Image 1 (spheres, rainbow, N blue to C red):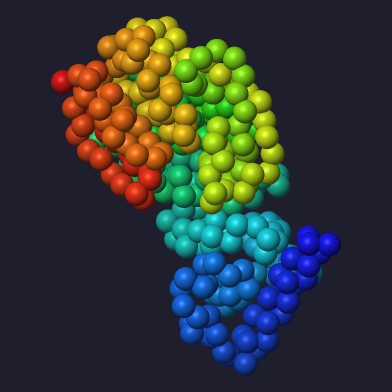
Image 2 (spheres, one colour):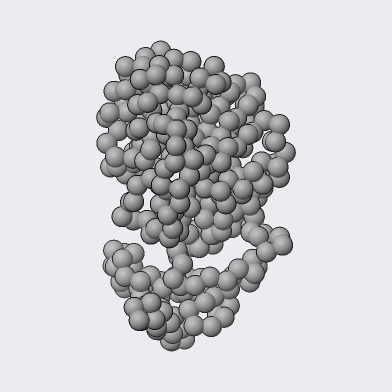
Length: 313
């Protein structure tokens, strides 16, 4: 019953938006931004006011992006869909055999559309993982997602990239992207999680695949619960001997993984670390300092999300 009510609510929003546009009324411009983000009715009206002319109304609350042959619902993540419209000038998107790809600079990526666009922007346009020389080096990529960071490091001349992605369908996309971009001799992606032990862990899979985590974050809608294989970070590092860059973006498991590697003295042969930290970053910073690392940069994406860059003293 609740699901039916929500659908009717979305359909109502669609027809209100159509009515307002018919009479050239930009209702959304008079609504405070806070309400536009938090109330779905206003969000749908704003979205359709901006992009309705570029969409085909299929039925109910379903619309098609004609140039991609992609149908979506107003129930979907409109912020992610909107990013597609915003990025079309610098990124080429296309549909091939029913799957959507993005060409970023000289690289082509299969996407879990409409997701993956934000991450590609961060990695290839903002170069958030730049500034550390990986030429002819060995890189460990924890949280490979669609292979974007691994391909970035390979494009910078890394000799070998060992990557880990726990979600099977995302790992499959990552491997496809490695093949498309001809880095199969450099990048090796393992379908495993990396943490503080051997065994199985539960991952809460979210609608936004890059947000799936061992924790439930209030802003992410959980769509399934999946058990995946996990291995300790110390073993990953010991097996390689020397690591020029350790990149960690594992949505909350970074605290336990790094602590385990520190206790086993597995960080001793790691030259540089870039780590995304959820929550208070102070404990990670202290641990890195104790391991003879110097914090060279700290970026705060929000009060509880930081990107920390560290190099060995």
